[in-house]
Amino acid sequence: MSPHFNPVFTPDPQLYPFQSRWFDSSHGRMHYVDEGDGPPILLCHGNPTWSFLYRNIIVALRDRFRCIAPDYLGFGL
Image 1 (tube, rainbow, N blue to C red):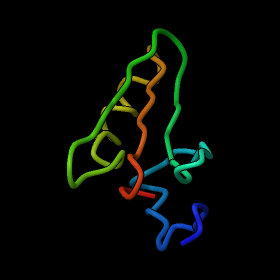
Image 2 (image 1 turned 30 degrees about the vertical axis):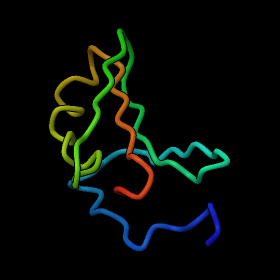
Image 3 (image 1 turned 180 degrees about the vertical axis):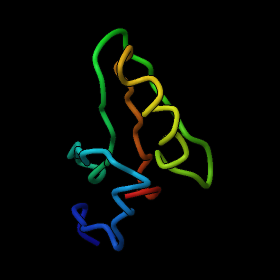
Image 4 (image 1 turned 90 degrees about the vertical axis):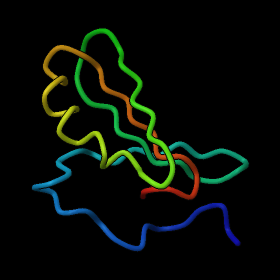
């Protein structure tokens, strides 16, 4: 299996209005959201969720904080 893959779906932009960002490593490609300015907040999901879980929190906080929400390898996009 290739460590680089394309997501099988794209979330509705009205529900998930964030720019997708990607980090490439030797273990695979990891999706994350990085929105806003200010002190950083790291939003880590559990199993079996992904950064979509924090969509409303990111929208509420991104005017005051930098919200970083990674999708663990094998989860989310």
